[in-house]
Structure formats: C-alpha cells, structure tokens
Length: 358
Picture (tube, rainbow, N blue to C red):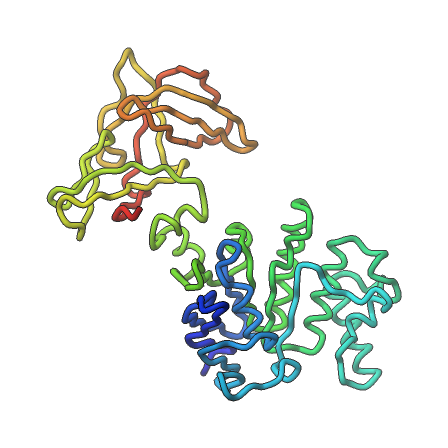
C-alpha cells in the first residue's frame, strides 16, 4: 500500500539558491511526522509546496500513490484533500465558532450541522457553537482552528508551528488533545516546528532539516540517541565537547581512552556528551575515584557556578587540564560553592565521537 503522502526530491530555489534541496519524505495514514529544524532551514517552504500555495522547481508530490504535482502537472490546492493549520489560527472574526468550523463544507445543511457538532464536541467547545472567536482564549481558538481544518475530512493535515502562540502551561495540554484527535481522524500529519521538545512529544517520526536538506530521519528515540553528527546532537540539548587526536583507532584524553573506529590516524575528533551523562564525584584529599570501564578516568576541576533549575541542578566546572568549562546536571538540589574541587567522569555508552569539522 502506498503512503498517504509522499514527496520525492523536492527543490525550491530563490535567487539561484536552493532553500529546499532534494527533500524526500513518506507519511502513512494515522502517522505524525515532524519536520524539525532551525528557522530558515526550508521546512515551511516544503509545507507550502505540499499545500499547493507554492510551486516546486523540481520533484513530485503524491497522495495515496497518485501524482498531484510535478513541474508540469498540478492539482489545484482546493482539490488536494489537504487541511492546513497555522500558528495565527486564521479564524474569521465575523463568523460564529460553528460557522468557522463549517466553512468550506459542501454537504447538506443537516450534514454540516452534524459534522460541526461532532468536532466541537471532540475539542470540548460545543457550548461555544454560537459564540465568536474574540470571546475565546488562545487555547480555545486553537481548538476551533483544528476542528475547522478537520471538518472536510482531509487525508493529510499540514501544521505550521500551530502551538507557538500559546503559553507554556496551556501548550502541553493542547498538544496532547490535538494528537489524540488527529489519531482518531486517521489523517497523515506533517508538523513543522523548531522546538525539539514538541517534536519528541508529538511525532511518530522526526525528519531533522538543516540548510534545506533532511540530514536525519527516524523515530524520536533513535534521532535523539543516535545523532548523525554534532549539530544534530546539539539541536536537542546542551552539549560538552572534548577534542582529541586519533592513534590506532583510539583517542587518549584526560578522561581516559575513547574508541574512534574508522577514523584515520592523526585526525582530530570531538567527543560529545550531554550534561546529564557526566558523572560528578567528590575530591578526596587531592584524589578522585578510581577508573572504571563504564566511566573511564576522572578529571579534576573546580566549580564555577551551580544553579537549581527546578527538577535538577546545573553545575559548571572549569577543568584543570585545559581551562575549559564543562556542564553537568544532577537530579534534585546540588549547589557546591564556587572554587570547590570536583572530579568528572564520562559515561562511555552515552557519549559520541565525531570527526572534527570546523
């Protein structure tokens, strides 16, 4: 069975520069795929080409295996069975909530009313059917926008930063409710966001974009835990970087030896580790803990700053061997004073070794 949505080698150029550069993607019915990346990486342009509001310079778009657009043939946007949802909600202020949801429906009056009631009931806003958008909160307006986008039963739902206008306390609840409704409707969903947390929370699959290309694609767990390069790792969290030079597929550092398979002798590598995967130990009269297979060798440093972040503490340590500052996070409250000596170790199974690229 073909995927609900498939794009093949989409290219879009502005001024001779490719802002979308041979992007390919498949999204099945009932699946949520997230296009994740920094501002300007081409993700919203990709969405607009799929919607039909912008034409690609190269590539094809398929829905349920049928071609809907290439550089010659083009199905108009209104005939693509694609729903759109944006961050500004785009509700009509002069129409009631019910009329907003019914906008664009071609059914009989009775069928329209039934579909409107069904969707407003799903989003918990049936009591506001005869109200107007200005009478609703931002979260409620977002749910009306979702109901309107789903009303024609689109086969594909395109969502461009739909939650960015909501405050943090509302956002998680609205995301979860939206995800549940989208799954019930069995649409293929392509969600654009620049927030890794949102992608991890909502997506079945993440496509990480950078410079107009998809650089990594897979389940959230795999993209987070097996990043393709240092930039992919840094997009999801803070990182620490220790540099070294390879000799015999090994890199010797103040934290012990790290494996660097496939890297030629003499090449520089970067050992990258997240703050939560640095182990902290106390100074024992100028000595640290003994080396272990799991954590390697301990290196000494002194506390620069320690802050409580709510559920964990962030400790910054200036290392004795090179003066660099490494960050480590510790569950709960741990606030050592500046200047206190500590020993840091790196969990071998949770660090990444990449060839250095300046």
